[in-house]
Structures are given as structure tokens and as C-alpha cells.
Image (cartoon, rainbow, N blue to C red):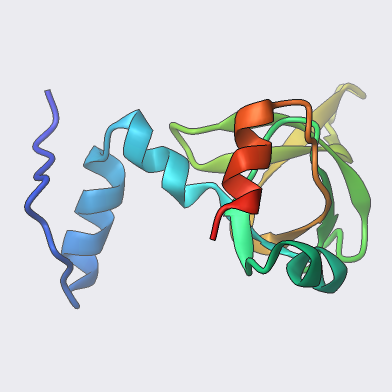
Length: 125
């Protein structure tokens, strides 16, 4: 069982920030998987960032694969990672492996609006 405290209000100590993120339950880790919206989506919805979902089209804005566009294939809440289609590395035996990206290194350029609840989230102020 993790030592997660709902009363935690924040700290400037990096040790406590790391402890909060590591011990957080999955419903709070969902909040760590938010990414910035592109400028046209920002104007359309009046929001700066939104939670990521499988099927969203994103553009990598930092790292080795900068300016690469692809759809989100998988989201790992436990590690707070996102796997984007087309971002992969070749292992020594020749097989391909998808690389994990941090959500802060991608920008959402197209939203997956299959979920009606997500549409309500985007429309509310």
C-alpha cells in the first residue's frame, strides 16, 4: 500500500514532489497525462491543455523526433508515458520497439472526439 496523502498541498522540495508523483493513485495520475493544444484548437475550445486519449493526433515538439506527427497508440499511466505511432527504435536483433514519450514533449493537433463525455469536457468553461 502506498503512502499517498490527499491533504498534500504542495512543496518546494523535489524529494516530496517525486514522492507525490510516485505514490499517486491512477485517478490522480490521469491528470499528469495532459498536453498543450495547438493554436487553432486553443482558439476553438478556449483551453490551453487537455487530457490525452488514445487516437489523438500529436506532434512531437522536443527531443530526437521533433516535428514528427502521429497518433497515440498507447498511454501508460503507471509510468506517465505516451507511445506515438511511428516513433520507434531498432534493437540490435533488428526488431522495432516503440519509444515512450513524456506528455510535455508532445502537442495535440487533432482530437479524438468519439467519446461524448470528452466533448462535454471540452465545451464546458
